[in-house]
Image (cartoon, rainbow, N blue to C red; front, side):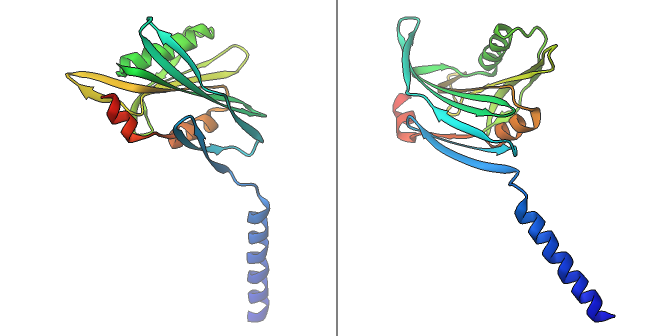
Length: 193
């Protein structure tokens, strides 16, 4: 009797190990360099996706403030995620109200009139997140935060803004935002202040 139980347990253990090895990983950890940023995040999906980066683009705000923008696009079977990293030549308003304005105007431009609003920490920093469900059933999520925000003379300023726009399922974007991390040269950040 004991021999039979030992064989059954061993067979059951082997079967479980084979099943675990045959299942695709639920979360893929991604790391990539874009411009002088290192970006990492986890993708909580078994769907196939591709990641692409664009060459940096430059521009000016108000005629005086220059910026460099780096874009990351994640295209998958279940939707897209855009990560937009914008670095300004001077410290910009990086307060929660500035993030709220970015999120609200982005969702409004997409046709949303009543987004759900959240103020989560993103990458360990205060952020702003909005989501809207459209009549088609599609959910659009937009998030904004500054990975280098500092408080100076009572104002929250940052040279870098990270924006995320996505229509992937909520579970995927939620986990991606919870794991998002942006690093950049601290020497460059210190030189700006």
